[in-house]
Length: 389
Figure 1: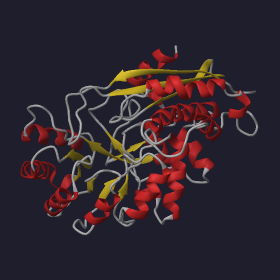
Figure 2 (figure 1 turned 180 degrees about the horizontal axis):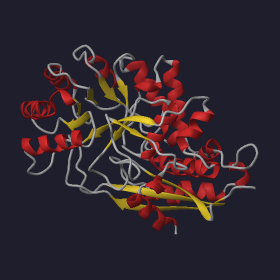
Figure 3 (figure 1 turned 135 degrees about the horizontal axis):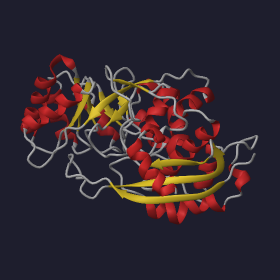
Figure 4 (figure 1 turned 90 degrees about the vertical axis):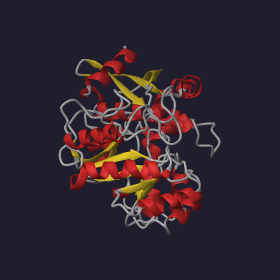
C-alpha cells in the first residue's frame, strides 16, 4: 500500500471574543482550520488529518493556500513516505513545506507550517491506527502516560467585569476540577491588578494556586515593579513579563523574583528556544517553558526544541505549552511534558478535551482515540467534517 496526499484544504474561522489581555483584544481573532486528505481508507472512511493554529496568532489562509499547500500537492508522493512506504513521514513532509525558505524570520510562516504539520501527524497516527501520544512514546522509546496535568486559563479583562465576576469565574474552574488557575495582569494600573490578584487568592484559598500572565507588556522597570509586588504572594508562576525576544530583561528579572517564572509561547523555533535558554536566565529547577507547536512549525520542530532543552540540562517536564489544544495534550502524554494549558470557556470549539473527559485533581486522562482525537470532540469535529467533505 502506498499513501498519497490528495488535497490540502483551509478555511479561516472567527474565534472572536470581547475579552482582552495586556496587549491585544480578541474582537477580530481568527484561526486557520486545515484538512490534509489522504487516499487511505480505514473502517470504510477516508483518512483525513486535521489541524488548526492556536489563539493569539491570526489564521494563515493566504500563506497556506498560496505557498505551503501547493508544495505538498506538487511534490512526488513517494518523496513524502516513510521507509517502507506504508505511511507519511512527517519529517519529509516538513522538509517539503520548508523547501526554498530562508532561515530566520519566524513570524507568520511558522504558524502556517505548524497548522499543516498538526494535520499531518493526525493523519499519520490514524493510518497507524493509534492515538498520537502512544505513537510518539513508541518512537522515542518512552512509556506513554495518559494522565496529564492541565490548568485553567482565564481572568481576562472584559467590559464591565468587576472583582465579584472575576471571583465567580475562578470559582467555576475549581468546581470543574482544576487546581491551578491563571489570570491576566498588565492591562490595568498595578494597584488595580493587586486588588484583582488578592480577590482571586481570597476566593481560591488553599484549594488551588494562581498563575499570572502579563503577555509581554512590561519594560524592565515595570516588570521589576510587578515582581516586587508579586513576590509577596504564593504564585504558581509570573508569565511573560516583557517582550519575548528581550532575553536580558528576562534574565534581569530573576534577581527580583525568586518564584517560578514562565515564558516561551511567542518563540517560534528551536533556535529562539535555544537563545532563551542561553541568555534568558531561566532556572531549570523552578521555571516553565511554554513553546506551542501549533505556532512554531509543528511537532517536527518541537522535537528539535526538546532536544535543545535536553542538551542544556532541561527536562521536558518543565514544558507546559500554550494554546490549550489536543495536539499539545498528546505531546504531553507521549513525551513526558509537565502538562498543558486549558481554556474551559474560551476559543471554542478548538480548545478543550474530547466529550466525556473530565478534569479531576487538576489532571485529565487521555482517551484511546486514533490520531489526535478530534473526532471525540463533537462540536469541533462538526467543523472539521464540513471542511473535509
